[in-house]
Length: 179
Image 1: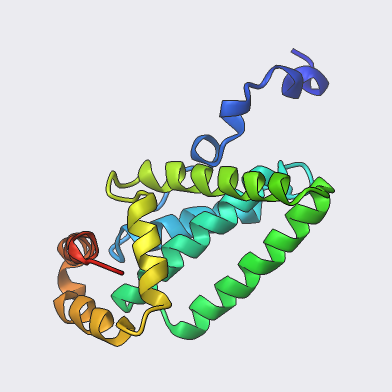
Image 2: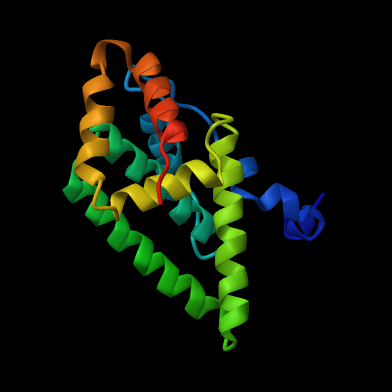
């Protein structure tokens, strides 16, 4: 088939983040780091101008979620977290401009779709990566209980056994009652 017609026959599902980011990393640093690296390869090798705004926004949400989780575990710094938050805001502004949406409801719907696509992508790595988990992560980061949660998670974290430590993080987050 001629290359110029190829994109005409691509199913929209195939353009979702979960279907286009290659899972190539499996390092000793654990799953969150591997996801971060896989997302990095995707964004470095894709032509952002040709990628859909929805896919790029989903990338930004996935990156933000995973960096926030890494921060809670103590595997990245607050400076890196803040940098990623700034990057997220730039992508959010640029993708919204590309859409040329005038209606606030359309923008909200677009952001919800991007977030859902990001969660679907993250869930493909770990079934516990869902909306509730990342909502808790976001709430913790804005909570007055942040120091307590950081203490609890980071004291259970063992760099010698990152997989078990990450499982402990997920368990702690799942059991937390954030109000």
